[in-house]
Image (cartoon, rainbow, N blue to C red; front, top):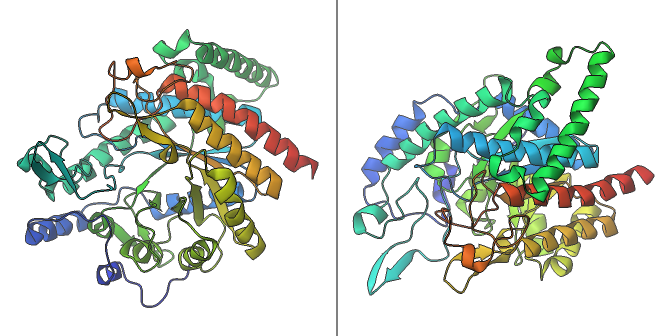
Length: 457
């Protein structure tokens, strides 16, 4: 990967920084940055290159990207059970998509680093008291007190340490037998099992078991096949807090390229994608695969300029464009963007985030999303790509493996009166495991049609 000679890991500091907290003690922040620079990397350059290669296959229509996980990770939910259950539902969704679509599914978690959230307002006011907005546990705490809301650089170290522990567990689960296809039944959650989605999943798992039994009877040693015994699982988060990202950036000894070793994949959010801003400046210079959220205000000219800045070599697998339009806008706003980049020959991967454009407040004041709205945006996203002859390469969703009641409808049949039953998100509403599996089966039908259409060309 080539980068402009003016780029350095710290060159972003000369650019406007959107969504930056007001650190009360810059010297404290500098000490923490120094500590982080001395820490081992969380991921390695070779892993990021492998992901980029797999994403290049997805962009070419030879795979599908499933990017899923928490809206914002919680320092209080770092126990093994939380991580295992989140991984379970992602593995289940990937199996459903692979089985129907007949293409490999690249699995990327919003995990081991997704601790920060952008905010519409810098401050929050309650009963005449005005405090800094809650920005995720990497910055401050959700409790509405001056001490809790004060940005604390030590939280960057806490985020790093929790990411280390999370990655250790993920690597153990994905390579130690838990993710083996021979355990496909074990991935079903207890509270999902008796739902229609859980029963449909069990039927799919039965089919996989029969296929594996057939393979064994043919003399194939399943224990010797990495693709059956484990999975490649990658991490990602929004690269929002740039001091943290810079401190974990390392120069690869093999290629000489710089990699942000806080995650395999980083993305730029809809609020920080200014062409002359610090986030674009930082991510244009690291060699990781990166994502860019594409919201309703994105213009064709603006997107072309961002693509040129972030992927000047037109490298396949480098840039994923994550559409997040909302169900009422996607059919009008997405086609000209996709068509323009198709005409440019831009080697980009298109993915659909149907969550962020469909958030509203319920009558009780809770932020929520309707499952049907989410599904509607995905259906329209697939339809746009089908009409333009382009590949609908991925799905990007916020979910948890827990039995939460944060999004309405879906297989879990959550109603507004249920929202307070188990609403545990510290930021945005997430699909629970039943709803996630329901979404996977619905999207699998769209993916099957897309792959059948691609094969007929």
